[in-house]
Image (cartoon, rainbow, N blue to C red; front, top):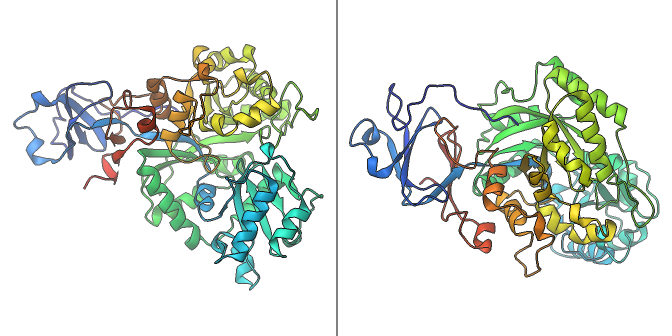
Length: 523
């Protein structure tokens, strides 16, 4: 997304002549700095950054609220560039299957919930519960691509005792159903019990249709947790007409984050008719809600072996191209005419080639979401065409075994962060929550160390970023607080450029501000 700058005239080294600042963050350092400075904030904007030894004895400091940060470090507030916020909020209230190492283990986890003190029914199907039927059990996070056995209808039926059950894969591209759930939702499944791609998305949306009074507090909690990690904004790609949901939440008190709400092709005509375009603030959004990109999914995922690839998977397939090249070109031309920045989901190397071809033919820049697997000859095209690579580094660690199994001999160009940067591409880091945690420090740690904090060695360390590069890609290209910026700020207890890898991954965040207002800490 283009960086937004404040238009008011700034006098470096001083506060606005029109009055005193509302807030002074005293005794701060920026990463790499040795001396302390004071940050002056007025009208939600950084008005001045002055070395603390040059602190004026008058002229506004004594009249402002002053927060002494005692030498802590400040950075521009962090953005998660790819989130499914409702799904992330729901995931924490569903059965966690991330630790299941086989289909049998996943079924056993569900069975133990049924036999125990009560499964998390609140995140099931509220509509059926209201009619007196047992809510659908919903689990999340399974990774069947690395399981030694296969999911099956019989296996899940045997574990669930007739209780409707739907299990969502970690990447949301696959749902494993039992017979009772298939009957309840009127879907047809084969002996595997699996739905993939669009049928899976449709059922996932249906499972998320819960009362607003239930979901909105979960979203509120998730937003506050994100602010606690230094996050000031997210790009929300929830697969629905998202604007009105956010207007309701903001009217109900949500104020933890800035939200850029994505639009999908099925809603593009409606958005254009209502005067929406990427980057415009939404009336009634309290200054927090703007229109996000146009999201277009053109292939599947690695976990489901539906990412569209040049070379075949071990089973001989090449994945799926879910939007044809002519259809994609037409959508991108429409986006250019309507003022929308396109964000094209492309994971496989063949899908990335199709996406880049369409950007070039349409004469428009934009974003490729994921860019997990790229041909060597296509790296330079990102920079040349002005296409941002919106990437999720934690996926490289979660999917390394799946990549080695399915892209054997070619993983040197999977999750290729260094190759993209070296070719002149701009990176934007995110989580794809709930696929990974909504925590930019997790993403930045994965990008820089290429290893979890679990003792397992780095994977393709040659593709790592520097910490400064990771910070820049998590702060919309800024990396360092500057006069004239929105006062969206994260206050840290350590220098992110020099702390240990473990401390970097778990970086303590003392405070977070959005437009000069504390959303975390600040007491």
